[in-house]
Length: 347
Ligand code: SF4
Image (tube, rainbow, N blue to C red; front, side, top):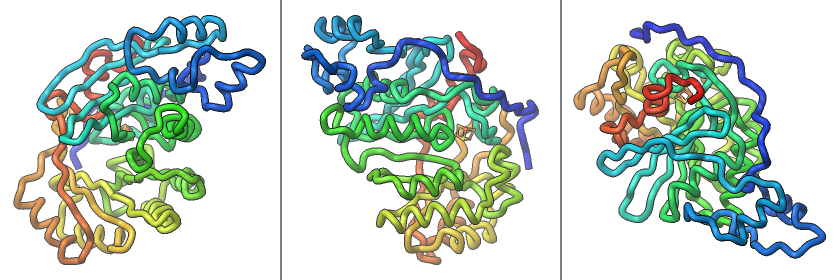
């Protein structure tokens, strides 16, 4: 199978940065504890003010309490069609990116969960520089706040593997959803993951009304190991079983994302295996086209092959849709802007 020429060495994760606590990392009970013994001049929901110019009362409160209200700095943004991609600088010099996608009934924020990524997927540039560090809950929440008040859907499809930053990602989701704060819509959050089996076992027991997408991209262990080197120790059958078990437990459907790559995973035999693996009770399939990236030697599938592949799933009764990649004109594959501008190094 065609692969990138460069070697994909993962970087060991570094410890979290030392900085003043972030206001947007505070759960409501932590906010209350911080204000214990005095009457706070601000309410919890004030922390999520979407304006760049924050109210004076909030600024005074943050000074007294020694917390940082905002920590992301917009470095650049690019527009293209219905999407806008923003590069956010972090306090330690790293950067992450988020994409805002306009829909007729609101906006979708595609956000990052880590700086870089350890999984080194062959079709993604984010893994090229390895994992630098996890994002804090407040850095995750702030991407949504800064993308504006029209955001009513969030997808964890930016840089990083969200289940590899489990604690901060789940805390961020709880903060976003808290009705005393941002009160984000109950079903508006989609966690997109490669499917780390141990993390899926934990996720199954969480009481969170979220949507789950598993990036499968292969129907055999061998092909998946080559496409996603960082997930070699994850048995493909266990990944699928854990995800379906999550869906069963929560009465939901789990989406399996499948990037159709000519000569790698697009045969009729693949389609038949995929139908068998996913089943038609708790799973559905999103077929996706490859979003071309300089330096990665993968090919774009054509309509005929995609149609044949889809036909097998349709006939097997597996719900399937073909997803158009948003923002091809602004390099919207995760990590592209980040890598192109900064080569994954601190600014
Ligand atoms: S596709 Fe996702 S999991 Fe894979 S390297 Fe990119 S960011 Fe990491």
